[in-house]
Amino acid sequence: MSLVSRLKDLVRANLNDLISKAEDPEKSLNLYIDDATENLRQFSVEVNRFEAERILIMDRIRACEAAIADWHSKAKLALQQNREDLAQKALESEQKETKRLEQLQSERVEAEQTSAQMKEQYQLLEQKLAEAKERRDDLVRRNRRAVAQKEAADAVTGLNKDDPLSKFDRMETKVERREAEAQASYTAMTSSLSYEMDQLKKAELKSEVEDAMAKLKQEIQSESDESAS
Image 1 (cartoon, rainbow, N blue to C red):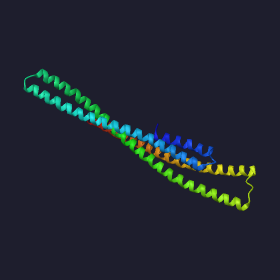
Image 2: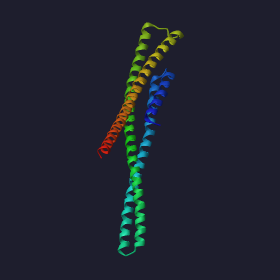
Image 3: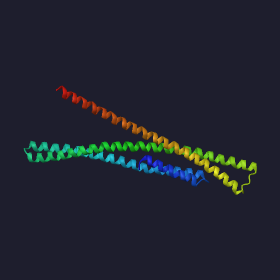
């Protein structure tokens, strides 16, 4: 699952938590952080797996290079002793290892790119989690302050807390306020993700246009050369 999909699922799940646990926003925010922390832990496992794969490929490359050198040395020794049959077999083995090395080099490039991308995504997710913790702490402080202020105001005004209708009205207002905060958070996150995806698409399109332009210039040059000849 991509990083974008994980972030969207995480936001969607915890928006539901904020509504369903409206009586205790502090608990909901802590659950959000717990989910995000677990998500980061799982992602780190994937990062380590890809890095381990890259290291394994590098070990195979070194072993393959050593085998190539060894077979080449054996072929040379056999030829010096007039054993062309053995030299030929050694060279065949050398060629096999050379082809294997070419394949491993290709795998190495892909593994390095994947590992680097995974590390970059991990750092982004780690940063998002740190920002979420700071925001959680701020919201908890605001919520506690709001609760204390409201209780003091209720005590001063002598609000009848046993009135079920007044409790309903207060709860409706609280839910609406939290819905607005949750929607604002969701909008900010999705807007940022959409902008990043648009930038990637624009970069890809620009690269494709540049490639097409280069091919067209080459085609025109070829036609011009043919006409000249």
